[in-house]
Image (cartoon, rainbow over all chains, first blue to last red; front, side, top):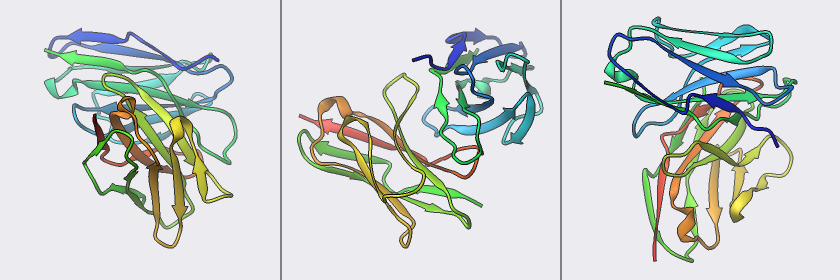
Length: 114
Length: 112
């Protein structure tokens, strides 16, 4: 079965650089979520999109922005990177329907800021 | 507001022994409950979920969890663990089509 695809899987950047993480949800899933997991931490919700509109916002820094495109893939743009942005970034998707919320997680993108 | 508390940050057990990982949640509305497993340097894999119905939920790899509304708990159990169960386990909660809130995780280490 198709799963959530994230690219790149690993990314190394310097401080103050920018980074773009991509997420391709499972086909026919219309909702995408982004989470950040720092070293030794639990995943923290950043932002979500439903039908290309932002549906919820968590602890996402102002330096970060995201969007969902017409093909439902999503991109997380990160600017002025800081050392503290080094983390594992997960994307998850869920299928249509508000009755339940099962999120399917991608493998994550490991971002290292030097 | 919703929150999740995992009472044990680390649980060491011997191989083939039973294990229980504890999870309590707080919410003023009905919630959905999940357990996720994260193996070293890997992503999150869903072990099991409680959405409604039977309070005893069976998941993959022989794990099960029981939803207890009066005690607001969703403890994870396995009758006999294997070395391959060594991982970080996250209890999580959400409602409707909303973000998932994770607990702080429990590191399960299996001793031979």
